[in-house]
Image 1 (cartoon, helix red, strand yellow):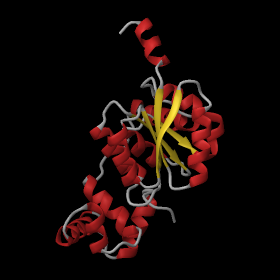
Image 2 (cartoon, one colour; image 1 turned 30 degrees about the vertical axis):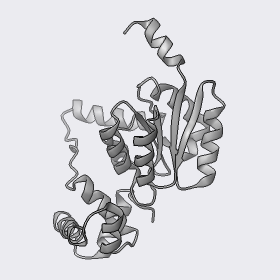
Image 3 (cartoon, one colour; image 1 turned 180 degrees about the vertical axis):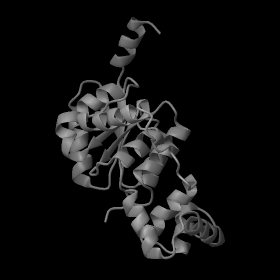
Image 4 (cartoon, helix red, strand yellow; image 1 turned 120 degrees about the horizontal axis):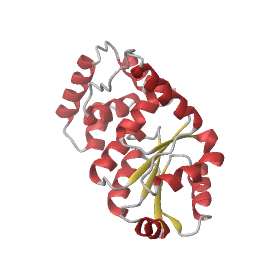
Length: 227
């Protein structure tokens, strides 16, 4: 593709989907986006599951996803969106900051990771990169990624990506940790109660969990829900 074609593509109108369960965040983000010439918010979602459904229906250029939402975490929503719409980019919003979380966000397929407190400083710059299919890292994320690169270059052990759960099992963990029963999990995911029970048993076995409270702690530690 020539520089002229890239330039023309960057000038095309860009459509954004915002997924966050806080109305103030949704509206604040919408206002910031729609100040930019040629940018529009084509939809908003309040849950992770709604984000996936709207993304498949509206086919936006970029989905802005909150990490912690009802029904489906931002990580799982991102994986499903990228699977269905590989050319749609995802920017992840989160209130959390950790090396493990940064790794999981980019493994899920997101192109950028923004701490909510950095939104005013970084959001538009991040979206300008993401709409052109380029990653955007804040200084903190860059420091963590560079540190991991140095560890690898120096021959130190860097933990590989290793999520023991399937995407459906991760969805089940999220719903169970929210306090939903097996019957409610089944209804939300469109599966039978027996299948939901099977997923729950597999989760407990794979993660070596002995109680529901340990499952909740796992979900909190992996930022599927907030403490």
